[in-house]
Length: 88
Image (cartoon, rainbow, N blue to C red; front, side):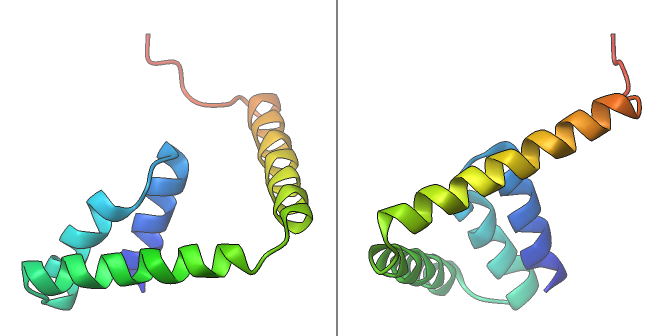
């Protein structure tokens, strides 16, 4: 579970798909071989894609809007409290 949470957090933060991190995590933490890790990753992607067809466009838009609003509030709160350290 910690590896899954870390992969989810990193991919969500970077805004990329998780496949490039999920496969190495499955190999390192679950002890799967390369073929099994790739197959498992593709199965999860297929399940997520199939589930997306069952959700209405309106619900997807509302969910995405809620997420964007929550992210905006979090960024605003972070900047009010000093934000990220200046690296320059």
